[in-house]
Image (cartoon, rainbow, N blue to C red; front, side):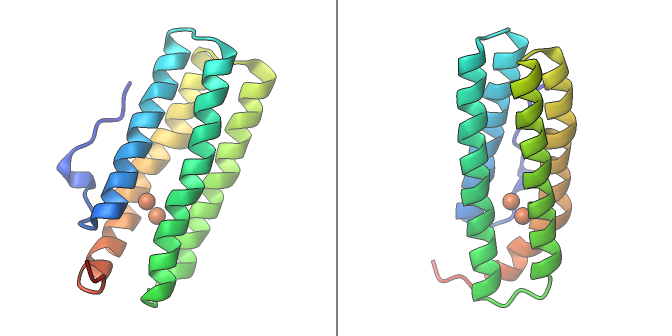
Length: 136
Ligand SMILES: [Fe+2]
Ligand SMILES: [Fe+2]
C-alpha cells in the first residue's frame, strides 16, 4: 500500500512540502523493496537514507519554529523525537528479522500512519503560521 501525495498534505511552505514528497517517495521504495522481496542490502540502503532524511526534515521544521518563535514548538518537537525512536525500533527489527511482509506491516503502522497523521494534524498547523513570516 503506497502512500500517495495529494493536496490535503500541502502545508503551503515549498521547502516543507518538497521534503514531505521526498519522504513519501522513499517510503514507497521501502514498501516496494519489502513487497518484492528485494535483498537485505537494498532495504538497508533505503532505511539508512530515510533515517538521515527524516533528521534533515525535522531539523528544517525545527529551525523554522525556533527562528519564528512558534508557540507550539516543544510539543511539535516531541512528536518528532518519538518518531525517531520508533523508527530506530523499526531498523532494529529489520536487522534482527530481515525484510519481509512483517516489516511492511510495521512500516505501515510506524511510518506511514504516523507521517500521515503528523502532517495532517501538526505540520498543517505550522505551515500557515510560517507562511506569512518566511521571506521567500
Ligand atoms: Fe513536523
Ligand atoms: Fe514534517
